[in-house]
Image (cartoon, rainbow, N blue to C red; front, side):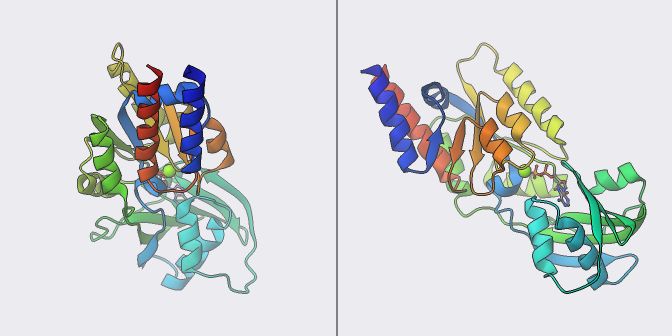
Length: 290
Ligand code: ADP
Ligand code: MG
């Protein structure tokens, strides 16, 4: 009967580590023809390595040290990487009043001085005269300012997930026609990743609200069509866009509680092939139901 097939589909998915929050999402997943991905932690591992340090003030060690201290208060994948680059050392740094600014970075007071760690948008907002070394390439550039004065930048490199290309191919085989990437990261990095994976569209330098705008625009373009839109994110800053999509998919391993709450489908680990598997299960279920 109809309900039994839905239960079987949801049960089968859960055995593969895909949590589907309701039978209606099986139907939506089966009809997805547009998949919108977040970049960091979704298509890329979200595990960055420091590849260069370019101080303007201070020395390399001090710049890394400052960034790592401020990042202690962030759960962004960038934070873990900067903390790893400067392992905790006994020192007398007093860090307080940390505040994270979604899509930009984090600010805190370190020994009474305001330190900002984030992207160029953040530097512009506080009026710090940032500049980048010309060979930043495809690295993500993290700027540091102390008391509003530019102190230099750190370049960190992420890698594309092992199964990302295979997942893209699998989705196309499933009949997905449009593959899109959204990111708060800079354009050169975004275009490099999208190019390597052969995505159809890429939007970079977006704030969380900008990601929602893009998804709304894509939804408006689809109006009247039967195809549905899925958004896949690691959850950091993604709750609004997860709720706005026809089906919001959160990757569980790095996902925040807010994202797991906002998502319709939760992937237990962060392998993008799980998206392909989830859609296959959904399609099979709908064929039985109809
Ligand atoms: P993505 O869209 O790639 O998942 P986010 O929207 O989470 O990225 O972040 C966008 C950008 O904001 C990052 O590429 C980085 O430049 C900056 N940023 C966000 N959080 C932090 C942080 N904790 N420390 C430094 N920079 C950050
Ligand atoms: Mg993200």
